[in-house]
Length: 171
Image 1: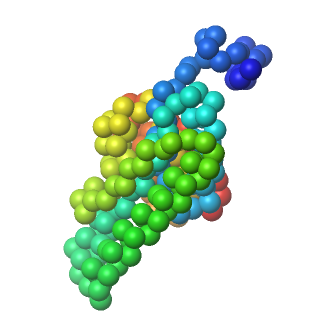
Image 2: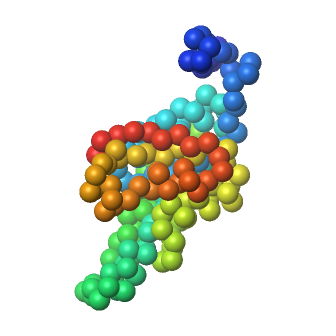
């Protein structure tokens, strides 16, 4: 029988007896090892709760626009854009195959925008999908690297109105 550890009660709470049951888990992925850990956690939770699993990947094309706005010309921006989109579709297909191999029938959501950053795209997807749990990886960056790269996970915690499970990793 499935059970969850409840630290505040110091014991085990059987599923269905006071434990939160998730109905729709959305996991946001990229090509990192941390994202793979987040996907594994989302698959486990979806199976444990009998929930729908939705796997989303966001391509942030606004990066290309940012270079252009700052006077940097990319030699072949169309080729770079197509490579980003193709890579994103591949990452999503591999993740969905992994979920199917685990016995789930995942929904897939491919997101791409020239205007919205990844966190904004994922936040919109959470709202549109009706998910009640968002699972996302965090790279655990600190200091200047965090300031420079930002944190999609941190932005999502502020932007969505559902519970967020952040899976830590050190890429």
